[in-house]
Length: 473
Ligand SMILES: [Zn+2]
Image 1: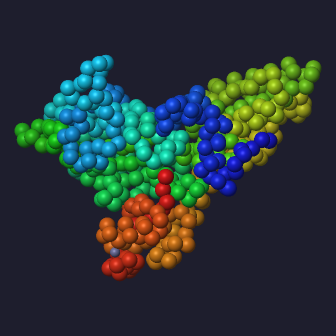
Image 2: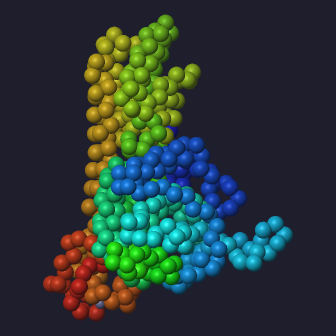
Image 3: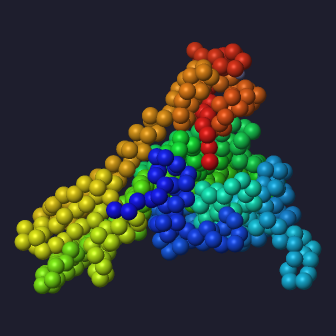
């Protein structure tokens, strides 16, 4: 079987670049860097991820909206920290035709400043709360670092949920719901992750606090896949989003947001795939099962008949299945579908007809097994669950093996992956340790934070919590 030129365990980043092209997920030849063309297979895969996200939004009573791409400068500038944080990353529109605009417009880097003036019109009384909305749209950020498909781009495929609540307490409940959504979603994607509370100097511009969702890539660098933000009333005050309480007073709402992007796809590719191509978790595989007829002259009819029958039975059970009847060798078909990461292959040849069996081949392990035609559908469905579990377990094992809770900088220096060190909560100490370790602060763990028996490895003060460090994308 052909393999990638660059091996995953030799040069992960170059292997990643090769695999996204080979599997035809995107085309990076578009003449604006960081604005890639989604090829059909990549877009299909992204749509399946979005489908899982929409499922979760539906279950939790969020409503989908679509706000305009363009934001007037005056609206963007209402929240000071936000403009400070995003100011250098936005694209400006200054002209319409030959005419210079009276007021500049910008391409949304995120949609707070487009949505919130409108929310202030929608929300009148406590009966309008909570307001739970989301959209999946493109956002634009002028990225100056080196771009990388799905991981660092300038046109972002962005999911953003925006909610408004009566008070801080109700907004906190939303954060809990968001965490539960992340737990369910990333389990289906077989992507174990960690929640971290970002340090104050690194939180979302304008947020009260930020919780990040990070995975560990095989290069031992973390990749942030999402973030959940508590805004308190930091945005509702400048944007005038208030409501009348039952006793007739006017109060500002408390808000939260939840953001994710096509980085999820980057993580799926990077974490699960191998030198033969993609390995896609069954929950989002555009094709979950591929049926390949192994045909010999004179026996075509029966083989194709059985392929069609199994295919139909699987379709009836909502399995995404394709029977590949192209006139090329079975070997070429195996290669194509392995590259595309289809979780399970079914081979059916004349011998299998005689033995009343079919052969299943798993993409994740390469293991083959013959099963009776009678129990085929049941076994295939079970195998898809087993494959999911195996992908989850492997990724979890890698994460666990590469998370280290240590007590001195010397110990931390020896470790690959994510290290947790006792922290006194001083910004100076964390930034200095970041330098020494040549990594980045990820944030504090949100659970299991007991640390009072230890001291900050830099200044020696009693530690208040742990701080995570890692090399990041
Ligand atoms: Zn310190």
